[in-house]
Amino acid sequence: MRKFIFLFVIVFMVLGEDDLMAQKRDTTISASINGNIFKPKLSKSTEASDLQVPQGFTIQTFAEGLEKPRMMAVTEDGTVYVTRRQGDVRMLKDTNDDGQADVNETVLTLDQVHGIAVKENELYLVTVNEVYKTAIQQDGQLGEPQLLMENLPDGGQHPNRTIEFGPDDKMYISVGSTCNACKETSEESATLIVAEADGSGREIYAKGLRNTIGFDWHPDTEVLYGLDHGIDWLGDTVHKEELNRLEEGNDYGWPYVYEDGKPNPADQPEEMSYEEYAAQTTAPLLTLPAHSAPLDMLFYDGEQFPENYHGQAIATLHGSWNRAEPSGYKVVMINFDENGEPSGYEDFITGFLVNGDQEYIGRVCGLAVGKDGSLFISDDAGGVIYKLSYEDVGK
Image 1 (cartoon, rainbow, N blue to C red):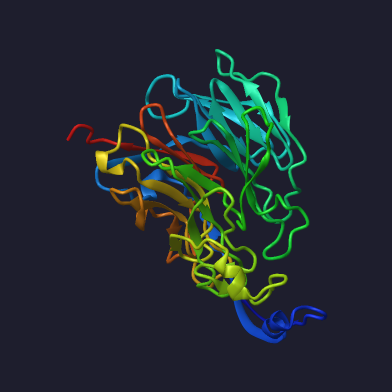
Image 2: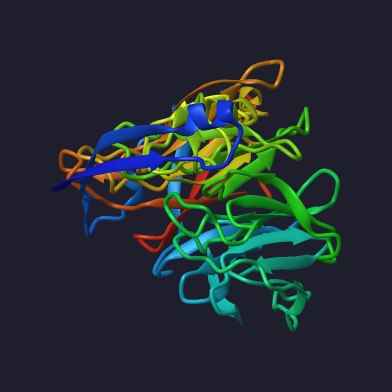
């Protein structure tokens, strides 16, 4: 483990501005910031039997040897498509219903592809700068990709775009920040973008989002929620990962304020104080441990799990590197009450950290609900996709 201590001294001065504003901004802010680097080592073991799941559930390896599988989408016939770091899309099928993929092949090569979604028998894919769609053939093969959108901002620190379709049938694309904390050169960086399904009408839906890879709509209220990554180098327990209710036109604070309006000592908002900026931003509804790195989130809408799982959000926490003791490396369930409001979270699938949390067997990434209501979880470190099933159906 390596430890770093940074000292930020920021002097803000205003010349020729309103006297009151100048008084607010003519200040010196200093902050000593401690940062640790520790990432557990990858263990050779990637056995599903090493994992802990709730009573009544079983978990098995659906596919392995995939080399960095990321985000997934499932068609009505149960075919699983997964994007990989290599810049391709794999097709996985379980044709004999034994819970394991017996068809596993590359069906499309597309440089830097990451986000994936299915709509009306077409597969939508997003790279760093473009959005494509391609027809799904009867045998599961894919047609020639059609460019729908281009000139998305360059990726920088966060190139992993994700794409989903909302209840309004519009396309939503997460565009992460290019940096840890900075003033962006593109107004579309650190935002959620919305457009029509054909790519037209593109506009910013929400901003101030450092990296909201995982987002989804509550199946009953149709309210949109997303998990945003906190800023690094603010300490082991700061800044926490945020669950936000994402509403059109809202600013969620990055890079200037976080959580309940706390100031980021490394960045100063322009033409106003931290307090004034915080007053016009939207605070999170819930926070998760800092640096645990949420990567995907979905509301369970299948019919296999017990009824009390309906309307609960499931999220992957990829795992930390910027703290002394590891956080994340697991799947959690975010609980929503009967009114559709978040009330807390709990562990759902654990056991990825082993040997006293000094090693890990995997880093969970993407999520998808299968045709039968099971849950698929990708592990981009172990090259595995797991399948979680509930055995006590009807009890």
